[in-house]
Structure formats: C-alpha cells, structure tokens
Image (cartoon, rainbow, N blue to C red):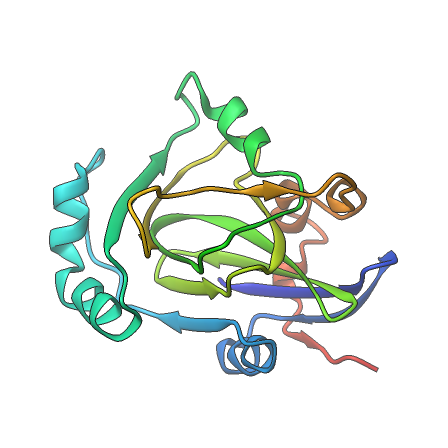
Length: 197
C-alpha cells in the first residue's frame, strides 16, 4: 500500500502527516508539482526481460512518452540476491538533484522517494502500480531497502539516463530508512491519515 509520511526538514522525530489514501497523496504531492498516478498491475515472469516489462505496459508507456516528450525509457530491476544490491542502494541514499525530471513506475516491489521540498521531507513509499514524477532540480533521495526487490520503468529526456548531482551536505541519514517505514509491529502502514497541524 502506498504511504506518504511528512516531517519538517529539521525535525525528523515529529510526523506531520501520514496517509495511505491515494487521493490525499495525489493532492499533497500535486501542490508540490509532483505527479502521482496509478496504473493497473500486470503479471510478469519471475525474472522479466526489459522487453517483457515494456510490452506489458506498452499503452501506458507510449502515452507518457507522447505527453511528456521522453526519448529514452529503460527498466531497472533488483533482487535481494543480486551481488551488487548493497552498492546499488548506497548510490541513491544521499540527497541529490537531476537536470531532468525523474519519472518512475513500479511494476513490482517497492521503494521510497524522499522529497526535500518547501521546508519538509515527503517520503513516498511507492509500490506496484505507482507512477511518480519528480520535477527536475528537486532535492531528493531514494531508498530501496536493505533487501531490494523491485522492477521499475524509468523515463528520460535524453539517452544519458540517470545522472545525479549530489549535495555536499545531506540530511538523508537523519530520517527513517525504508526498512523502518515498512517494518511490522508499529508500522506506519497501519495508520490511514495524520493531517498536518
């Protein structure tokens, strides 16, 4: 289930908002210029090829390309047993920006985008069926968890693909990582909505 958690960027101990309501998540992110959408989840092979993933979502992918002008699309997937999983996770854990928009659709699995915007950190736990579009120059980081397990489609405006500009000082390590947000017991997933004061 998709989850949005919001903190003030200087107070990671206090949750300002926590919700699993898709409409509310879309509204909150929309106010920041971040697009959130959901696509139907389609069955994929256990270890799909890039072609199989793109073919499964061909209509949706073509529509995004048509409306947003993307010229390069790829598929990124990781499993817990991949030898480079830990290194791949570490690459994205510090705050960075992109000159391009970052559009990502989760065909399987999950990951958390932490958006540092308007004096707050908005953590968006994306799961299968979620499409998130982060505007260019948005300060953010991404956590795929200590056991990454996802298949995603990524959209770019040029063939350079993913290029990040990392900040010298990052606040990322002050905020709960993906594993903490999704753990069982007192998991935030059990809370529907905590509105901002």
